[in-house]
Length: 114
Length: 114
Image (cartoon, rainbow over all chains, first blue to last red; front, side):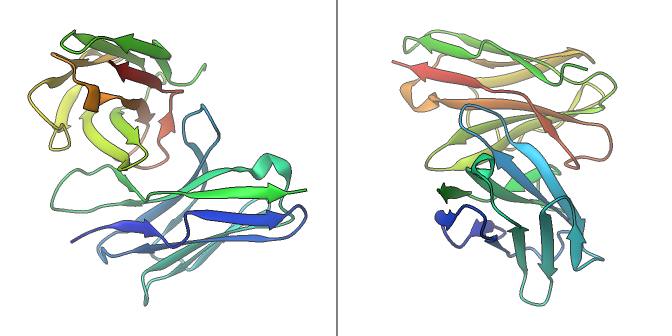
């Protein structure tokens, strides 16, 4: 079946280190992917997106990599800060067979160690 | 713009009661989504609207759930009768362009059914 899932439910990193959050997707027809950040008590907040015709996209301190061969998505956060502590979701734009809305993975909880 | 506005932020109700959640999308956004978030199932798309018209409600769990969008600036999600398993955080999101891209989320309504 179609799914979006995350490899690790919790990731703990030292402040200042780089963080890498991974995501696997199974629908090869998906053409758009987004990373969201959700802080406690808040709604998901858009971080960065990437389309299937790209394999890398950079933002401010964040980079998203897309490997369509193995259906893998990753979010890299450089120089992790305390404010980066949150749950991170990858989401895909699913085409066909149902809702044309974003489908979210379970989320990875990023914990920043001082 | 103040972003997507949801009300109430918290709702506690007794089993069997009717619950109405409200959402005001970002002005000018043509798409509105209702999501439900639980620890077990993560973020699930319930229904979405395009230009006030429901496009896909395949995510609505049961007939007890209904959603309306009487105009471009207001939507409701109603549960009647409510059950304890409906306890979750319900998010409303809106987007400007095609379904699912760059969706902006509200702060959510935390529903507890006792």
